[in-house]
Image 1 (cartoon, rainbow, N blue to C red):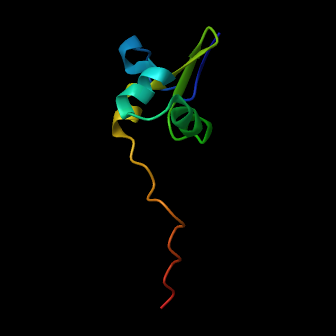
Image 2 (tube, rainbow, N blue to C red):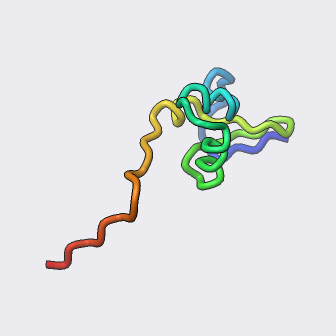
Image 3 (tube, rainbow, N blue to C red):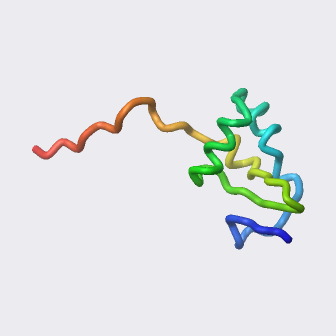
Length: 75
């Protein structure tokens, strides 16, 4: 069974990498990638019980700035 979070993209195997490979590409832990997947920040594809992430999403990922979001200025 194949499950994708993006139904409109045709399947190209070179577009998808394992979470471990994504962690190596971004120089972060696999757990950090898993958190991004869990928060919906990276598109995923499941094949045969294995989860893959979109390579271009991993390369283009921009983290949110640290800390609390600034309150809107109501002047």
